[in-house]
Amino acid sequence: MVKIQEEPLFLNYVCWTDESKFTNNGVINKQNNRYWSDTNPHWTNDSNFQHVWGTNVWCGLLCGRLLGPYFYNGTLTGRRYLDFLSNTLPTFLDEFNLDTRMNLFFQQDGAPAHNAIIVREYLNQTFGHKWMGTYGPVQWPPRSPDITPLDYFLWGHLKTVVYANPPINIEDLKNKIIIACSELTQDQIITATQRELLRRMEACVENNGNNFEQFIE
Image 1 (cartoon, helix red, strand yellow):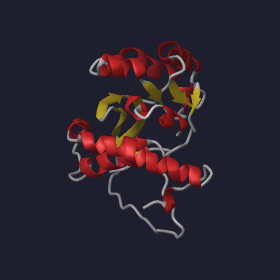
Image 2 (tube, rainbow, N blue to C red):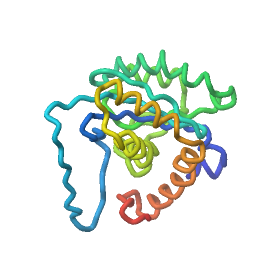
Image 3 (tube, rainbow, N blue to C red):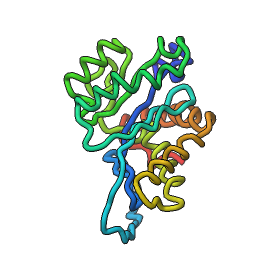
């Protein structure tokens, strides 16, 4: 919040990132997902899938645009994440102008792969003090679904679109994700990463850093 007061355009340069797994039964495996309620919502999820398959997805949000989706197989390890950061992320960032790349702040959450020493060393060399993470120069809470745009906006939005018609195979699932991502508008992303983010940060401060999502409309 102080940074935004000092530099009103700061949020334009933050690259918000996250990973998630989409499966054929309509479940997004995201360990940070939480639903806060004063009463038990008694939610149930009927599933007739005996064989569950899916795909892992990385996405980023920057300057009103979506980076990705990028699909990867298997568990995200430190070395696999480092390979993505050094070989794939730069190609996504090449699409942005020099001003954005020069002022970019990279954000990630507290996933184990993000905290690998080789990853932190790379981020320090590449972004200097301009990255946010559990052990970054700018510390970011390891579990922060209430204030991370991909958690409170992107994954839920994609789930609504992707599973409107259940995917029939892995390629169909990937294609549905790609199409859903391509249909996101700049206004949707800016609303999530700026106006909604500011509202949530203010609520976080008002509640002394405690869980607050159940108090906002």
